Amino acid sequence: MFNAIGQAAVEFLSHEEGIAGAAPGWVGSSQLALAELAARWEIRHDQHQLRVDGLGSHVAEAMFSYATNEDDSARAFRSLRD
Image (cartoon, rainbow, N blue to C red; front, side, top):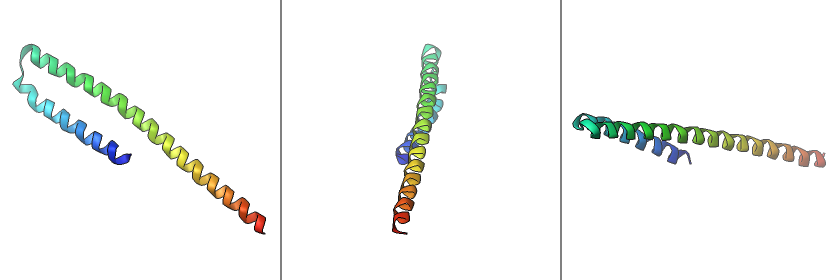
């Protein structure tokens, strides 16, 4: 999962650099359209990043809860032996 997130971030930066590099060659309404497209992509990227951050938090919470539950269960079993 984390590899996919990193890859998406790298690809976004590559696309952003490509648009920035192409912008000087565009003029008039084409340049405006390119700028609007880049702005929409940036907004969409930010929305996706917030969602991914939220998912990462949920995964971290689930991992912590799982580890805590496993530790509690192991302690309960050990207490039965004693």
